[in-house]
Length: 412
Image (cartoon, rainbow, N blue to C red):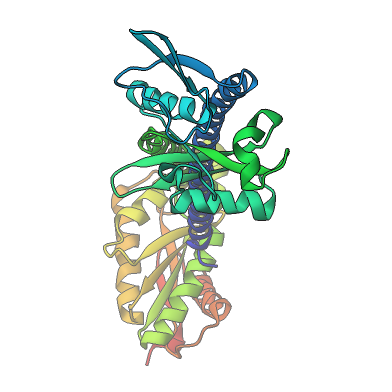
């Protein structure tokens, strides 16, 4: 079993979660930008509609009164397109009144609105009485929508090279007060005879930088949470993995890890055509040690032997583990039978040099016996290799302990 698989899967899943989170944030950003556009368009449409309806009310008021009279001034001259014998009324030598019909009033309102608010009004029709009321291309399209599709209003956001503005047109319905001027054009009451276009000035830009900034903060915060949780999960996994493969007493790998690692090293040795050796060690007369000194002292003895084994392995590829009870194993990749015997002898001598007291043993100190086996046949049977090393250990015990025996299969 490859011990790196679970963290790799965890990293992959965290990457998927992180990618999904970024996708959600990106979708939220796109949705918020879309909503902002919709809100801006809706606000622009409602604003233009309010201007149109206010203008429509004043036009209706004017039409209901048959027009209103105002003094003729430099800015307000008689309307040449108004066919009415009483268009102009002389009140005195200094005062001449002229009639303002709804269309003329709309033009004057448009001039005032443009000066005050930057909003433009334009009364227009597909059959205009006044040449200046001829529709432009956009207004023509809107008027055709009124006639062909039966619409009563039409609005659109216009993007120019240097500005963004909104155009709106509301239909003008022929009413009875309109007939004196428009009956000759063939209109009847209820017909759409034109429209009033409203052009709003440059609209405020969307708060895209703010939306991007806020979503970026959310995205980074979410990723930090995911990374943090991933770190906690990885740490928890490492702790569990450590508990699963490490011996709780001696703090060196346990039998499970030894078997996994031995199988990996055997595969590598066969693939690379390199030798591999195994040493199984046993503390001599350990039952007598426990009986004489007690189990707590026995545990301390096991820890001292485990520490000695770990500190005396020179290469990073070599490793030791607790096999069970008072038995330990050492795996030596790329090591021949002769080299393994030398390592085993070094370990036996290092323990002897510690001179750990053991009054229940013939020599009066703690010693070890060891069996060595090598995979000279380059096979993958880890159980056979363990069995051969164990048999060599058994011979070492039979021949008096505190000695090293090697499996005869690796002597060639």
